[in-house]
Image 1: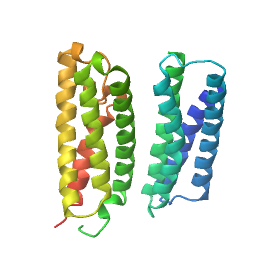
Image 2: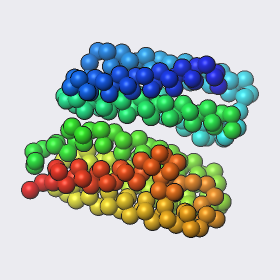
Image 3: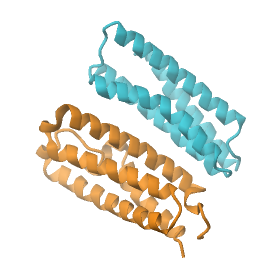
Image 4: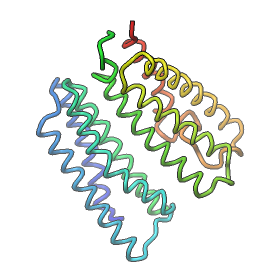
Length: 119
Length: 132
């Protein structure tokens, strides 16, 4: 995996989780800013998935096992859209908290993906 | 606090989201373990599958309104809590049975101990939103 991309994704996800928690602390609902943040995160994850597919097609194999890696890869794309949808439906400050949880899960997923890829 | 949908609003919405993540993670993990290396540690992998079922059940029942789903949600959170404590203890006393960690081994240490905190939060939330 591209180390720089993974590191940016992890740091970015943590920053966006902080942004979401700040939104909740200000007693605001999920708005355009947070939805944009989720879209940005999703775009970064898509780049990572495309890169992984290119590497896998080129014969590279994750040391920690193919099924687990594919699972993480697919899972990484599902989290943010579902969190955005679920958080948007909540009309209180708890909506942004859902998105914060989603971003934290993404940070953990990318760390795990790195571990599975490098063994 | 008996209004319809109260269980899935406010903090409940975050709780259901976290339960959903664990339902997904535990199911995927158990699926991979059972499909690829079941013979290596059948006890651990069957417990993984059991944990996955409990998480899926808890997620769905927390999200649904109604008295029956309330009871099932309480039951699944209770089973989950007992499960984390039992498997956590068992995994520390008999390491040979758990060569590969499950969601609940070491009281969920592989998942930042969230598995041991989650059922407690779930039960507290269910108590606050109990139907009259």
